[in-house]
Image 1 (tube, rainbow, N blue to C red):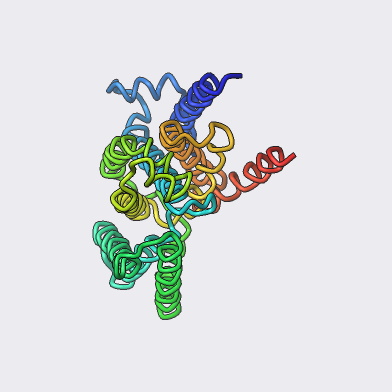
Image 2 (image 1 turned 45 degrees about the horizontal axis):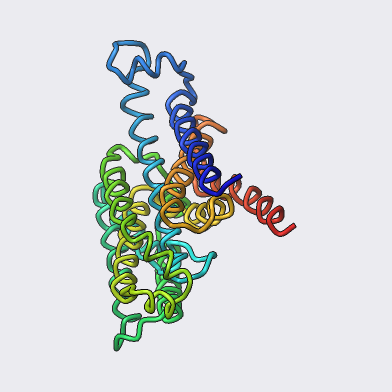
Length: 325
């Protein structure tokens, strides 16, 4: 099959999976809602369970899809920036910074708004620290950026462990749940949704330059790419979208690592196709995982980050084995 036809087919399949995940998120739960009633509720008809669909499941589904898309987009950008298919959006310590802010907010007993604010400020602070230290005297390389991010992430991890060790017992459950990913508090999805749209539109104009950067720094520079400017832009976009995703959904460290790699196996390394395909795949995966997390042992909920790992790891290993063979 020609590559462009294959790419079109993969994008169509991913779009269908995204729609299916969204429909399942609205219909499935401790109270099942038929798809016809879901449609009626969305268009405003006064039916039973309309409040469940519009006020509970719809905001959560939008947040889940947007956060999954943000993490996958950040992962795809970080992998081409660092020229490493195993890089993920948390490798630069941004998740660790958000974790420090969130744990501190929970220790202080702040509301959800305060927790989100502290988590975002922590992520932003970690981003600025990594950027400043990695930049140094201007010699910013992939290795220097990666090592700086790993060190900052380790420091943030130590601070999180310290706060967990001194936290009162009645706060530990909420702290651990946030660290493993939690969409149950996502009542305002418009920030992650808006961020996803803006970030994708901002990333696509760089797709051609990213394709050249994937061939190497010297090759890209010889072909007219302003590599320094491109790195700054990609780093800023990936960092900010990760901060928004982690603030909205907690620490979910699997989607951004594996989804872009799986999409790359299916569609190739053309960033013009890889970036939107990763958004669709990441959004569908996190939405499906969150639906399972709130229904498997309802009324109790599982951490969605655990479900993403349980779903994605076998698929990743299976596809990787097939590609190798």
